Structures are given as structure tokens and as C-alpha cells.
Length: 342
Image 1 (cartoon, rainbow, N blue to C red):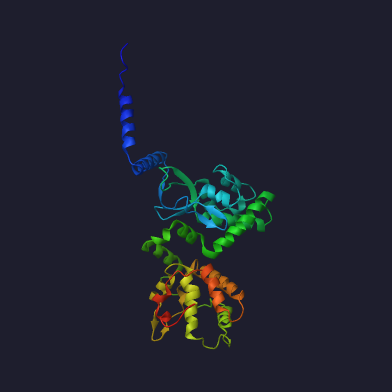
Image 2 (image 1 turned 135 degrees about the vertical axis):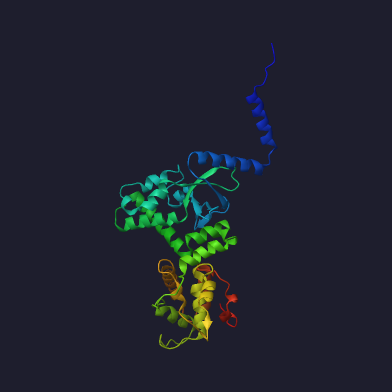
């Protein structure tokens, strides 16, 4: 009986196995990633690679943990199953979220963009996962979904199970208001440490105009009245000139905390000339993003102010720094050189 002669296919298979065993873990991971991308490209679907994020650095919102990533195109994404858990929908198959939002009583509250995003999730390759494709959604969609449930609850059209999810959405929305979903993902993944100038410019373009607009009242009188109360100063009304340090407090409490680079860019666009600025800082803010963000931040700040007793500036600043940390280094600005900011 003659010995079996290996076929060309068997020889190729053995050679392939030997080559695979000779690869380092990193090389095998890269090879698997390329194979996955090739399969999805053939299917007509693009697969991006996540450059930041890992299982041990999730987005934490209270007791919740949601896997989050930043893709090679700069998009921030959340794990699909992580979003389902955050909304209280469980850990089951990935279609639970789509099925939940597909209920007839929710459809009137879901716009086309959200519907399309939910029906066609993002597919991406996670770092250090051997090329395994993950499914997720752009991070801001979680906030959009919460708005849908809260608006439907307001209209009193939710079923009992949906009301439970709406309560969870309310908790999430409150958390988003404190910091913002983009900032949370950047912090969790470490992306803020390597954010380049292009990403920063995109933020500035959203918040700031190319040219300043006509003046309109943007700061409530109570904002300044609360500063005086907390500092223990006598309030004489808005018609009396305020000390120069109040301008410093305004920059610290507001513009330095709105978004990265905002204060620095405002100093460049609106410099002090002959002892004064040409226009108010807020005249450079955009109508669609800048002013709404400014208003939200101002009223949140006033809310923290109200929680403190008279002359309790230090206590207020502890709360402020915890809830809304500064995004700019105030030591870089001349007005703060000789002024100690708590």
C-alpha cells in the first residue's frame, strides 16, 4: 500500500499554518484586522479602526459603564450593547435597541437622521481585539434617544415599560448636562491628550463667529449679584461700575470652562486696546451653538451660586471646579497675573 502523497492544497495549508505560528501576536492581530476589513469592503460596507479606547477604560456615568472609542476619523462612538444597558434594555442581542425604538408610539418623535443611524450601526475594529469587528453608534445618539423618550413621556404616550426607560433617560440627560457627552468620551479614552489643532479648530468654528455680532444682553443681572453676595461686597445695581476683578471672575467662571481653547481664541480676536475691549466677549459667540452653550452654563453656574451662603466664595469655587473644571490655564492671561483666583 503506497503512502499518501500530500496535495498542493494540503502543502499550502501546512505552509500557511507554519507562517501563522511564526508571526508575533501584533502581526497576527494586524493580519486578522485586514481580513475583516477586506470582507466588509467586499460587502460594500466600510469598517474604520478605533485609535483610542479599551474595555478597561469605559465611559462612566454614575454606576453605569459604557465601552467607548474614538475612531480614526475622529468620531466618538459608544458600544451598541453598552448603550442598551445604559438605557435599561438589558444585555441581549444587538437588535434590542432598534426594536425598542421601532414601536409605533415612538415613531412620531424620531427624525429621519436618528432612524437611519439606528437602522445602520457603525462597524469598527477595536484596539487589541485581534481584528474583531464591533458594532456601535455615534456617542451623541445616546442623548438624542433620551430626548425622544422624554418628549414622548411629556406627551403621555408611553407604555409602562417605556416609562422605566424614560426615567433612566432623565438620569442620563442630567449627567450629560454637567459635562457633555463628547468631553466624557474624550476623557475616558484619553483622546483629549492627543487632540490635534484640527479638532480644536472644529470646536472654535462651532462656538465662535468669524466676525462679532451686534450687542445683546446675554448675562443675567443675577450672575453679577451672586458674585457680590458670595464675596461679601455691597451690591449697588447694574448701573454702578463693577471692579476689574469681576471681569476676571467672568472669564474664569464662564469662558475658561465652556470648551477647550475658547478663552484663548477670544483673547486673540477681542484684545484689550487702549485699556478696553472693542466689544463684549459674547458678541463673538455663534447663535446655534455658542449662545445656547453660554446660556446653559450661566444658569447652571447661578444654580451652584444659590446653594452657598453669603460670603461663601471658597465653598462655591470648590463646587464649581468639581462640576465644571476649567478648560484653559488662566495663568496665561495678563488679567490674572496679579489676581489670585480661587
